[in-house]
Image 1 (cartoon, rainbow, N blue to C red):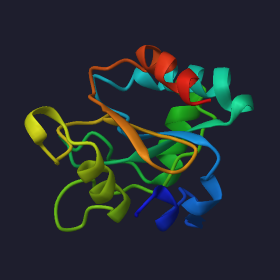
Image 2 (cartoon, rainbow, N blue to C red; image 1 turned 180 degrees about the vertical axis):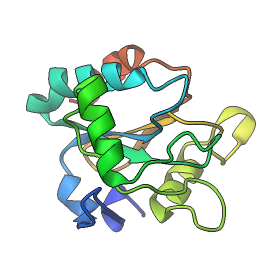
Image 3 (cartoon, helix red, strand yellow; image 1 turned 90 degrees about the horizontal axis):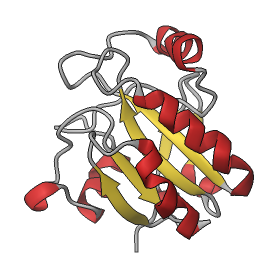
Image 4 (cartoon, rainbow, N blue to C red; image 1 turned 180 degrees about the horizontal axis):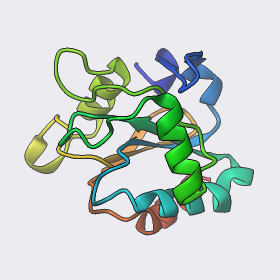
Length: 159
C-alpha cells in the first residue's frame, strides 16, 4: 500500500525532503500561487499551522504556475512574498506541476487517492488541499473555494 512516506519532494531551498520523516504528523498539502484570487488563503493556512503545529500538524505549500501563470516567481521571490504579505512560516516546497506529463509523483498519487468533483483526478485550480493522516494516508480533498478555517474540524479529528 502506498502512503506519503513513499515520496521525496524538494524544498524551496533545493534540498530533498523524504516524506517518511512526516509520518506521525497530520499534513495539509496545498498547491499555492502568489497572484491568484485565492492567495489570501495563505492567512488561513498560516493560522491553521500556528493553531495546531504543537499538536503534530503541518502545512506543506507547493507553489505551482500551471493555472493562469499565477506563480511566476523563483523560490526566493515566492518565499519573500509569502512572509512579507501573509507572515507564512509553514514550509514551502520547490515549484512543481500538479497536472500533466511533468506532474509531481506525490500529486499524481494524491489525486488518485481522493478524486475531485465527478471523479476527476486533475487539479482544477490553485489552493486545492489534501488532508493526510498520521499514517500517511489521504483522508480528504478540498477544492480551492474551501476556506482553511472550514478544515479545522477535520484536522482536530485527526490530531
